[in-house]
Image (cartoon, rainbow, N blue to C red; front, side):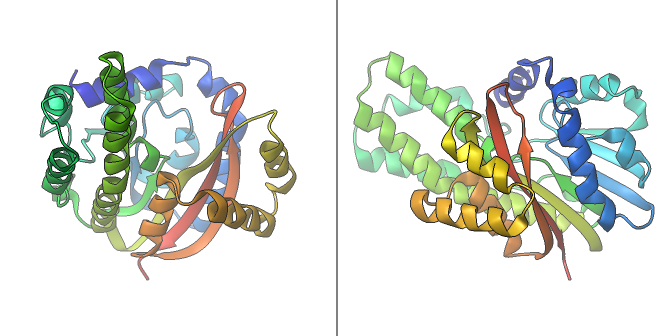
Length: 297
C-alpha cells in the first residue's frame, strides 16, 4: 500500500466494533435521506466510503440501481461490503486519491525535505509550492455529470492534514523546536482551504445538473462527560437550538476544517436542508455531525 492508503486503512481497521455500535446512527442518517429520495434513481456515488460502517448499503440499494463506492482504502471498502452481507461485485469500487498528494509522493519525502529547511521563509515557500501544485487536481475526471446523487461522508477533516500532524510528531521525536513544528502545522492548516475548495469543485463536476448532494461533516468532538456534550444532547433534536449552539461555538473558537468544508460547498451549491447528529465515534468520544442536502439549482 502507498502511504495515504495505508494511513486510512489503519484508521478504518482500528476498531472492529464500530459497525455494531453505529447501528442507531445509520438509522438516523437514513431518516435524513428518505424525504429527499422520492423515486428510484440510476447512479449514486459514495465519497469517503471507508469500511462503510456509517452508511446503510441495504437502505440505499432500494433507491439506486447502481452504487459506486469511492475511497483511497480499497481493502476497507471490500471488507465493509462483506460485513453488510453483500458481495463485492454488487457495487462498483473506485480507489480514489482525493487530493493528489498520494500521486505526487508528497509524504514520501516530507520529513526529509523539512529537516533541510532552516528559515521561516524557506518552510513557507516549500509548503505553499507543494499545496499549489495540487490546487487544480482532478479526480474521477472521466465521470463528470454521471451521478444522480452523491453522498460525501465526513472527510474534510481527513484530507491529509492529520498525516501532516503525524509527520510533525516525527520531527518532535527528532527534537526539532516547538516553533519549527508549530509553523509547519499552521501553514499547512492555512493551505487546507485550497485543498477543500478543489475537492468540492470536483464533487460539483461529478454531479448531474439535476442531481442531489448529501454532505456530512464532523463539526465538533466532545468527551461524553463534558458539559458541552450535555448541551448537545439536550439540543440535538432541535435544528434551531443546535444552529445557535454552533454559531456561539464558532464565534468563540473560529472555523475548523469541518466548518470550512460546509462553508465551501454551500458557496457553489444551494443548501435545501440540514440536520445535526451525534456520531458515537469512540466509546467516550463522540462527533457532532452536520448533514446538508444540496442541489445545483
